[in-house]
Image 1 (cartoon, rainbow, N blue to C red):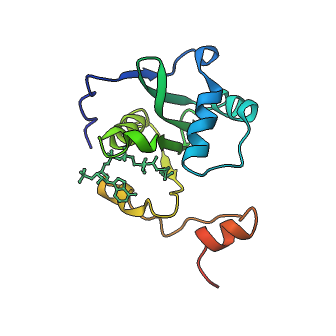
Image 2: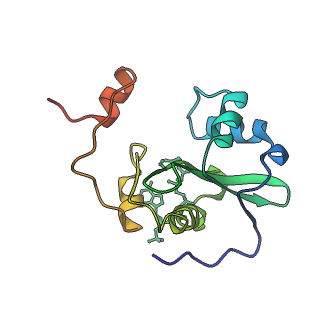
Image 3: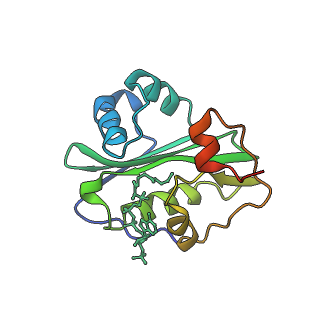
Length: 150
Ligand SMILES: CC(C)(COP(=O)(O)OP(=O)(O)OC[C@H]1O[C@@H](n2cnc3c(N)ncnc32)[C@H](O)[C@@H]1OP(=O)(O)O)[C@@H](O)C(=O)NCCC(=O)NCCS
């Protein structure tokens, strides 16, 4: 899928200098969408170890972000695709996913783990359900939300 046009009101930063990022604001966005068990310094470390990061800002404020965890050639995973609820429904999520995916043309295997309720969002963008995916659940919530019943 082609990367959509950038929306004129927003500022897009692909692989910015991560020392310039307001990690408290990133944490706030995670909390706004109810992904609450995160810590600002751990988020910063995780983004720092990612192969690609993408942020969308309005003026100076981050309103959306996403990242890729990859090995540079064979395996990559999209992660933390998040749009501030106040800015959802404007095409920013679609932009994040397609622009990140566009960075992965050389890769052998590209996947992601969708949040509950986001299946249709990814299917609409051309992603396919992976029949061979497995997860090692990190607790009962993941067992409930991400696993088939045996
Ligand atoms: C899922 C999320 C990233 C979508 O962002 P968004 O900016 O609102 O999405 P867009 O405006 O780009 O929508 C693109 C298309 O997907 C559709 N869509 C958006 N969210 C959807 C959802 N949860 N389920 C089904 N379709 C969805 C839109 O209607 C739109 O369809 P269209 O192209 O036919 O008009 C955003 O709701 C979000 O941050 N959710 C919380 C975190 C999350 O679940 N992240 C993704 C899973 S890892």
